[in-house]
Image (cartoon, rainbow, N blue to C red):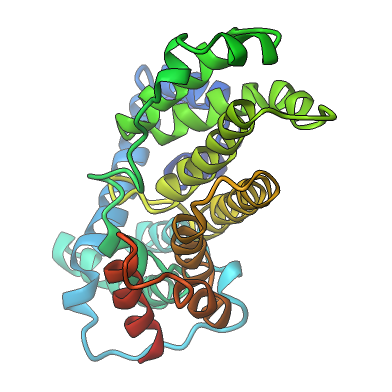
Length: 304
């Protein structure tokens, strides 16, 4: 059986690295479920990656590997693909020896990825795969009980769609929440540009940007998935942008939750590698704040 799927190795690498568009994912899945060559190729490379992720800490304990060049240039899928191609030119190797060679040759990429990715420390400890960063609790004004809000928002679809996005967020479906909130960006921008905002409308706008930021933070720290370091940093950058915008709205309209914003901004800065700014944010959380204990704990870790 022959497979003529275009750029097969590259597509498999991107599929494993979660770099394909949704459309391309569907197209490739339809192909490999009916193509034994691609199915076996994908299975072999996926098993190799899973073995490295699961056993790397034990197998490489005590082994120091310094990556050459920038860590952003390291790509697990690309490395494994090269290793696999080399092993196939050595058919005499036993399965056990093949696995050992694959692991040893992948040691550098394992440590480079582990170093570049902040999740093994801070984000993993926050466990956003089991708990949302901060649960959304809809207020009465978002249940259609505030006529002033409905009139201010010209189109109540905004409120309804925002609540749908929050249901996905509370269910730990960060990616779906991110997509839904992105669809509301134009409406939120129009609301923000109004000459005057009531307190109720300002609060809705704050909720929108705050939870949009937390959706990206939750996705970046979702321990159920393995995001490439570059993709994780992209979501952390989005989280920083939206949380900063929510802070600006809070300050303009005196919404009065600065310590909540400081806590989550501190987490984002820390996960992004900006230790000094993270500490500044976390140290503004007062002892009587419900976020004080967590802020102190994270600040201690950063100060070591």
